[in-house]
Image (cartoon, rainbow, N blue to C red):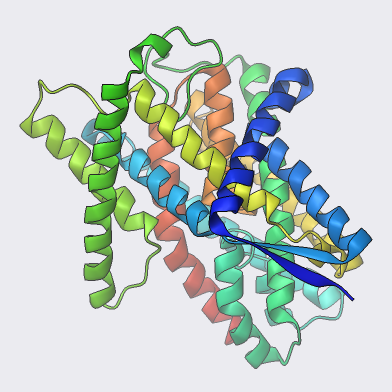
Length: 402
């Protein structure tokens, strides 16, 4: 008889840091992982998730991790993304943002068509295809769990929540492994390079960094102050949005307020010491994202995937092939066939199959190796963290009620 061991939040965070560092150590020793731009927390997180799976299969022990600290790190990370957003970049990113939104909508529709076809093939109701499609993939665990009761009510499908969680889990794993190799193929195959190589990285420090001396305790404290201000004001904005009847994840208002604070600061105090695009902010952003992703991956319940067997294997293979083909032959050419398009391809591959943090981790691994692409780090989060929830909800609701 199996039993559950509850891991409290503080211990979960501690294990997450250890798993992140383990991944960094492995990547430093295995050139293939670096060559294909596999993020360090992905390496450590997937290894840890396999250990958790082994404990479950061998001893019947299920580890249940407290994830409050992980969720705060996500808010901290997106506040940092907001602080890095310059008004000029927001203006320049307007056209790519609109185009990426259209491509995301097309992906949502295609994923659900593939999901519906696969569901029918394996004897599931066609409406359950959303759980093999955008509800679990582009939507992630949260969206899959939110829509599973509606699918169950409309179709009578038992275990809808477990199905959605399993698909989202496998999607997250695939997302973490697909983006980096796709970017490598595009960048090295076409000899692409950044248009502004001297800019600071948005997240993380370059693999060969000569600016570590610019990070001191005052810079770090200044960055943390502005991050806290963005989060505090983000909480206030979140309450206003909720009062207006809208529902958005907390990190979205924090991202918005980070943008507002950064650009107000630049306009009102142009001579002040910088916070945006500094090594300190890049380092804190990388730490927040990496620890979040390490904790997310190590807490995956991989045994839920095996229970679906052939159906999930076939449908997810089809979803992955579609994502790769779409990124290489549709998204990359339409976004300009340049370095920024390649970085967005890495991010979109992670976002289409997994979640926004996975997408950003993929882009971070790519830019740390090849060079910065600031607009990519603005455009993709705005689409994936805000617009996609609305578009996804409309498409899923239409299919479920069909």
